[in-house]
Length: 243
Image 1 (cartoon, one colour):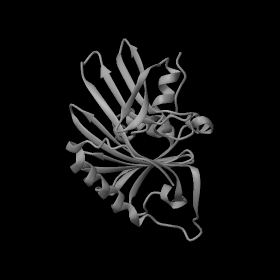
Image 2 (cartoon, rainbow, N blue to C red):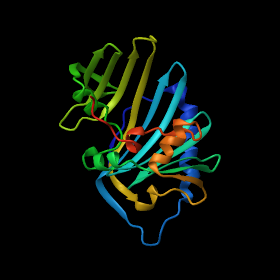
Image 3 (cartoon, rainbow, N blue to C red):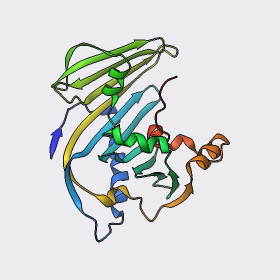
């Protein structure tokens, strides 16, 4: 297993980080099929993130194997689990024991072939949007390149590791209209570790309401289902090219 472990923990978020660990522990009862196998693969990734803004903090843990994703995110006191695997997108509240299962769009399934790691792709998106390298700095002792994109909406700055395969360490966003800033901090990057197939299967204890893709879109537009819990919309809907 390979680790990248910057020391940039946010002290004021420590209590939230500790609470977020509960969501990991709560789900250790995930059912494991007898024929499940573990694989050590360079396609296996993990990272923890903390978003800091005026409204507060949000802590998330991410695991992936190829394009499959499992994420635990704290929304207030509610640990929200997201799982994306194959043609299914699951999201559920661990405290309430309920959630939804959605068939993913045909567009996003087609895009899986080129998606790579399903999180931590801030740098690639910035380069595609025309961002430029503006210097080098150290982030918690780790040498980093600084990239920036400025437009009418605001300013976005990214610190990424140096080398042929940069990964993000910190992202700062400034919204010109509101005058507010938010910071996304990445820590404890790890890759190439053992991960079971069953980790990307929802707990059987969760009550799931099932939707076809078009049905979910219609119900969410009518306010009959919570679309705000879809924290990774590009993995459900796909990314449409700009007009």
